[in-house]
Image 1 (cartoon, helix red, strand yellow):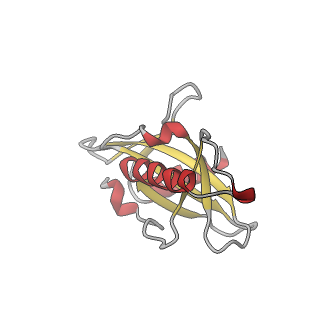
Image 2 (image 1 turned 90 degrees about the vertical axis):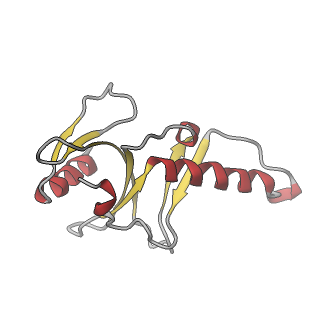
Length: 142
């Protein structure tokens, strides 16, 4: 929840109208709009904690494979040590869906430990090794 508040604060500082949704709003944590309400976006927020890894990854459910629209975004938040500003990765939902489907299939096709095929699971991962989406506020087009 704190990450949602941090993200809303960043949007507001940038002149965007933003509001947290109530808990039972399926798949959207934040609604955002430009100042004249001519464009809006639904935002799903996912977080992970910085662990000195080469690149961060976020865990998603299999619904991410098929949950997308033109104005739905994922904001992946990398929480850092105390008092450091988090990193925000802004990604259009269709890109997340492509990433999760493709990478899950690659994982399924690989032979796992002990020489066995991986079993299908509802868990997915998103990562941005190239940092293409890091601080890409412009993608929101608000």
